[in-house]
Amino acid sequence: MEPPCIPGHEFYGEVVDIKGEVPGIAIGDDVCAEQVVPCGHCHFCRTGKYWMCQRSAVFGFKNMPTAVLPSMSSCPKPA
Ligand SMILES: [Zn+2]
Image 1 (spheres, rainbow, N blue to C red):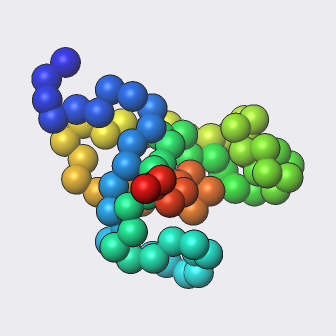
Image 2 (image 1 turned 135 degrees about the horizontal axis):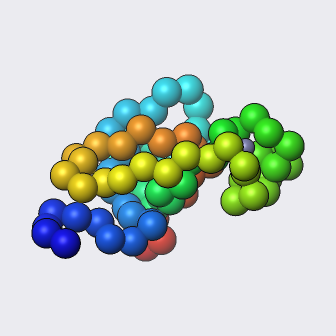
């Protein structure tokens, strides 16, 4: 494995843009996020059990300076 590379399934970064309203997160905030992106529409996603989503996607991060994520895949970074 050669750097730069994020080997885990979770990461953090700075919010540089927001589409729509995301309560508790603003541009410039540091957020933690997951590599798994749930569909947001199935029964499990609609009932808050997105980790059980059967249509989730996983994306890689090597040499990726930015990522576009749904709000359900990220949360404010703890202080
Ligand atoms: Zn889903």
